[in-house]
Length: 221
Image (cartoon, rainbow, N blue to C red; front, side, top):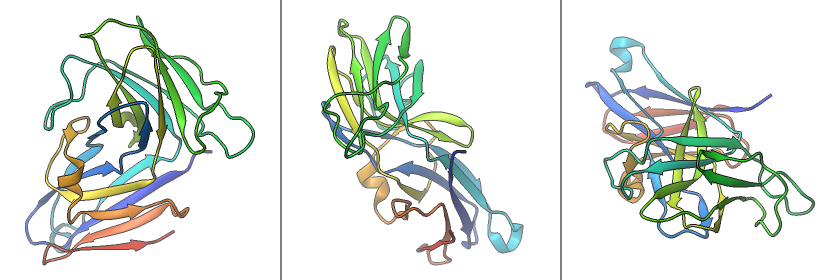
């Protein structure tokens, strides 16, 4: 049975606030600039007035993702359109795992993962086939959020290339609004954001936006 990582948000500010959620970018080998997508966004009223909380849930299962795009990634724009994903293992320190998948572009897809050779421990590998630019494909780490799979962070793929991706189980909550699947500026968005670090094996973290705009986080489980 898969494990759900849960973030519960409470808004103590008097005004209704927009909140969006995003992930710490993975460590990549075989790509160039790393881009981040918003994963979920919604509005939340004052807790005292409404009693409402905002819940974000992400499956701890790791996914490899590929997405076709018309243009290079741009902050504030959708990262792409057609996409495919595969549940995948991370390479162990010793032994083997199904940590490698091969992409196809016609049709777009990812083959069933198999054991790769030389994949860095803690990472998975996506091998892209030969194709002709200006075709654009984004590859990287996808996550299952609130029942749907979204490309969380990615690099622009190169033809006939290996991309190794080492996901990080750290998520952020920030005020504002970014439609899921929209490219965002991770560096700017993470400043003064609430940080929810699940790398220690935790599964539930409560986040409170205080009346003065500061954050409080509490590990529940």
